[in-house]
Each structure stands twice: as structure tokens, then as C-alpha cells.
Length: 256
Ligand code: ADP
Image (cartoon, rainbow, N blue to C red):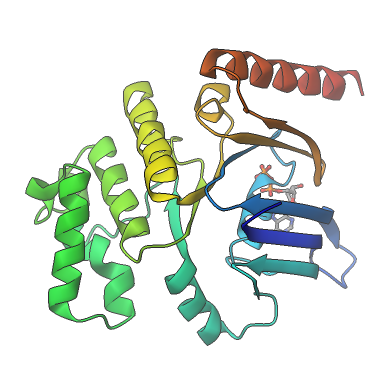
């Protein structure tokens, strides 16, 4: 695959490693993502989606195997190096937005830059430009609890983008949004993806949300069970295939 931005080899995660409660949540996963892909990760509850996304994005560390992001192996980095590496490479969006209610929208968006000691003028320039693009500029002095869910999610997107990451990692980003705001967020993702070449890796349980992606990864019992490329399919054709995969997989689990 050309332009690989993320690669895992034999990625294994064992929770409570070395104790009698040890549990292997991911089994030797080999996985590659190319620059500009928009990956959706699906699978039943408890199949390992969050574990997977956390372990490929430095939030958690694998028990064994390798994870390379933009050619750099992350497993042996110190926590200091990881902080710096995240700032250089990754942007995160979470289901509950993770905005700090005691900080304004501006301060929330600026957070990754403030932590990296970027100078004030540069911070202002970048925050203003992104807020303008996401149409929340008039809300920058408000606090998150004075804004709607969709507006807070836009602030979370600005915060994820403010350090110009090459990869966005999103865990159930539409989990707290209504259908209109969810579709809007997916269009923003598609645009970032097609116009700015940002790679997106997203966990979702919703086939409609997945239908905006370029590739589906279906995880079951800690393995990648299936993958589906959108390729030349229309969004509607892709959506139907995604629904098929989900229902076939669910039927198999019921029959087990
Ligand atoms: P999903 O995101 O698909 O719902 P998770 O990645 O959260 O699944 O969990 C995968 C499996 O790992 C589940 O069986 C879960 O109980 C287990 N697990 C998740 N986190 C921990 C943890 N911190 N300690 C022990 N087991 C865990």
C-alpha cells in the first residue's frame, strides 16, 4: 500500500497482563492505513473497537507487537515523547466532546497549542481561522454549557485540527448528536479528507455514519473479521453492504 500513515504488526492487547484476570482483547492484529483514507471501525459491543483505537493512537500501549504512525514506532516512547508526538501527528474527537466547562470555547480550542507553548499571536490566528471555517466564531467567548451539542462538537473538531494533525482519531463522534448534526459532521470529515488529505479513523456503531467512510473494518472478538472498501460504490450501495455485513455478523453471533 502506498503512503502508509499507520501500520500495526501483531498488535496484541492483554488487560491485567500477568495476573489471573488476564484478558486478551486484541489478537495479533496486522493493519495498514494509507494517507487520506477515511476508516470506520464497527463491531459488536465488547468486540475490542475502543481498545483497538486507543492502542493505535498512543492513548494506550499494546502488550506486544508494533504500532507505527508516520513511520515512527510509538511503543517504546517515553510519556514525554508521546505528548510531543501526539501534538505533531494526531487530533482526537470523543463522543462526549471532552470540552472543559470552566474554559471558554476559545480556550478549549487553543488547549493543544497552549500546552505546546505556541505563541499567543499564532494561537489566535489559528483558532480564529478554524472557528470561522466551522462557523462558531461568534461563540468563542462563550462557555461550552452555553452552546448546543452541534456547536460543542464543532469546537471539539477545531481543537482536534488546531495542531494540523495528519490523522484524526474519533471514538463514536456522533454518539451525542442528532441525525442532522451527525450528517453535518460526516460531511466535514469527508471534506477534510478529500480537500486536506487528513486521514480519519473513526469508531461508530451506525451503518449510516459508516457510509461516509472509504473503508469499513469490522472487528469481532478481538480480530479484524471483515473489511469493505467503498471503491466505486455509490453511498447508497455502500450503505446496503454495510447493513448486510452487520446483520450477517449479528446473526452468526446469535446462532453461536
Ligand atoms: P468495544 O469498544 O468494542 O465495546 P472494548 O474495546 O471496550 O470493546 O472492550 C473489549 C474487551 O476488553 C471487552 O471484553 C472488555 O470487557 C475488555 N476490557 C476493556 N477495557 C478493559 C480493562 N480496562 N480491563 C479489563 N478488560 C477490559
